[in-house]
Image (cartoon, rainbow, N blue to C red):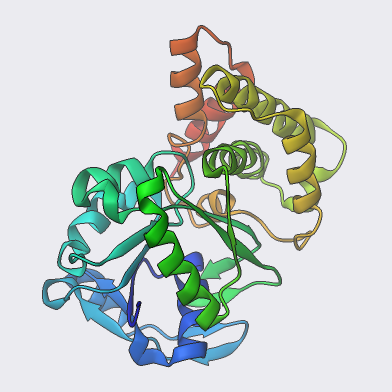
Length: 302
């Protein structure tokens, strides 16, 4: 049974999921694990969720103890430091889930802590926006969970029971790899286009160059997924376009938020991954190449 949760990362998703658990179980049931530098800075910060003040519990990484559940909620570029910070959090019975974008974080976490502790997880459908301690969202979305192999089923059952207890929105997926690639397809499209074109969800959905680039980048990802043996299809693209239509029109995804804040983005994880993997399969990815170059040019001025 999961009694206490550690969350590594105090950005949009870290605060969103931590707030759900603390609202149900109390703040003593969630610790945000921080290295010394972040702990010093974040201890002075005021946090809020949809305008309501929050007082989250923080703990230094060096004094952490094993938790029932560890949620990794950092940006891709911060994953190596997160793996170091969470080392004391992982014990014999710990289950780890990652809500990072992309298709690689679970593999890297498993290499550090063992695949027997890591479930596959995708955060989907939320329009969370975070700035300077303030989290705002209109759509909570859901966590999609699944196993890489049958032996992990008890881990999935344990997490699902806990999520039921805390009213965490989730879906237990039969084909988690398909869902992982489908979410990756969406991010390759909307995250990069909003960042490259300086637009929001409404702008990405409106007919024009941004929408064309978004759909084109997603179709290149479908071709790559098919080459990898994943049955991603045009129907998945259509389904995710419908999900985008439910989000706040003025909202922007995490990568565009990084560009606004003049932070290095996760472009290497999106188009960088697509370009590299397509090359290995002899596939072309001109739209992802265009987005990769454009976002790198934007970041060069930071």
